[in-house]
Length: 512
Image (cartoon, rainbow, N blue to C red; front, top):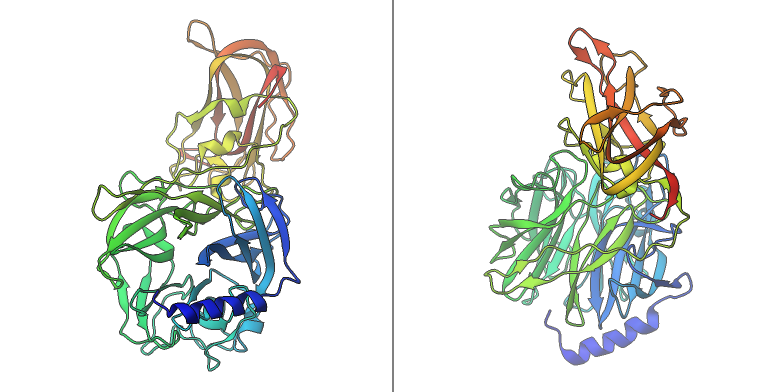
């Protein structure tokens, strides 16, 4: 952005003086997630750099561990003068704003993905999707704008007459859910906004007042796999649109369902397009949703996003992460390289008999794309799981009768037990939905590479419980085991079988 240098310097002094630190607290991060102890869950990050300091506004996830719904009542902000993927010193402002206090026309809750940008007047503008009270629209989500002299607030409504975008504003309106705004103030002072979810991406140019829609709508349909969470930015003379993608190309790691988006991007020579899809830059992470933001700080580019990796985290208890983003300038336009996702060093854990986490997990049967074979040995058992939290064989009315799961190790292990946590939404014996198996058993691969059934000394439990009985068997030395699961049903129609976790128990303790 182009500002008179003296005016900007004076405004910076004012920003520092007006920032309220009373409700903030400082902490030291040792890597991703930035705040990993589960004390304050955060999702939908949007970064902003002011005077070499990184500000990341996020929604506050407060859903209980077993609730599969977004519970977001406020926005907070993470601030660091020396951000790093390896950690560093941060300050969290836990309550920057609430929807109903930010906008008199908004209902409480629904503090979804917001972004703050600095206008040409030096002030900070927060674009926030909230639920409009007493709305006559089919979908009540609308985008409002608030303004402040400081990135951390306090913010006041910059357009008190109501939202600047909804299903009825500006005329003739739209029929999409109006969330996930992203805003760019270009080098010439022009302002652009994009927004949308569930595959719809719309854009406008705004007046320099930051609130008035200036142009007719632009509908973007050329970004392969676009699902939601756009992020508009500029580097050199190229405009980049990052987004959460589903089914982003034939070899995409992203699923075509609403489970597990990845981050992809497109490019354009103009802020309003046309946009050309480029590639995936961040494969699926541990949370089903994904939300990108990219920014340059002190000559280093970073990607911010969220995961479910904090203590007690989940798909609705997310936590933001930050990793280095690099460029390949030998290409034109410059290519964004695949981001190397990093994690904080894990604290040492007690030795365990369960060596399943050391195995490679696979399924002989084709696994439906919304389920994940890695869930078998991630040591996470959710009370109320989503499909990515378990492996499952369900394929509508074509679920197979026999399913085979395999663990393979790079070394010989000695095993004498196993356990399996099942998921079911139908009763035992059903021939539809997901039900407990009719039976299951384990085989091991012997030294001649043949499969042999283990000699179990206790029975195979079929109940659905998160604390199943262990199946004990005579010790075997092997490099692989497999579980044979026979589905319930008959006459050509069988229920799906689902497994939250499958343990392989060694005769000796191991460090994992």
